[in-house]
Length: 285
View (tube, rainbow, N blue to C red):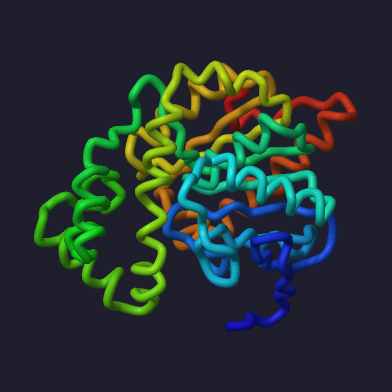
């Protein structure tokens, strides 16, 4: 469905939804997320920026994902969007945050922002549930697979099986349920990439961009615990844990707060060029 104010264009094999005017910001969605899930975030930023939300492969009008998938496939797509739009700022959410960090390994940006990036440090991300999830999905048991996903990732506010099953039913049979089911086959390869890329994090020391890492107070510890470690590794990084927010703050629960954090980070970097200090509300290296 065409949304008011959006411009939609094809950049090589991916669709890009753009909104606003000003310096460009590229938004990279997370796992099981479509570009339109970040519409509120984009509208919050659009007063001062042109926001380009990438419709990642395997979704919407973008090309199908190849069988030999790696995070580099998404990185190449984002690099293409940066080249096409001239944008020099990237924001990534969840698995999109992992993509954003790997974009930062390829190109120096004016600013890089990631909300709870899908990074595993020394086994911090437990993917032990992935085999069961993949088997359930392959056999068409979407409800069981979604329940396994929610329990394995600890992203639901509860862990009892009946409640997880009820939430899975709402996600798969309610509004947007068909879209969620259609995206589920992209999950195994993405979770496998998080596990494959598990490391001590030293590779990320090569990211030269001014980087802001964000997390929510209500999110699982494995998502927020890597942020101070990454901040110590990256040469130009800071992080903040935001009170009252959870993993879905950028796309559902608090896009206005995340937009404000992005704007403040960009303003801090502009001031930094003129020799002023960083805001003390964030933790920097």
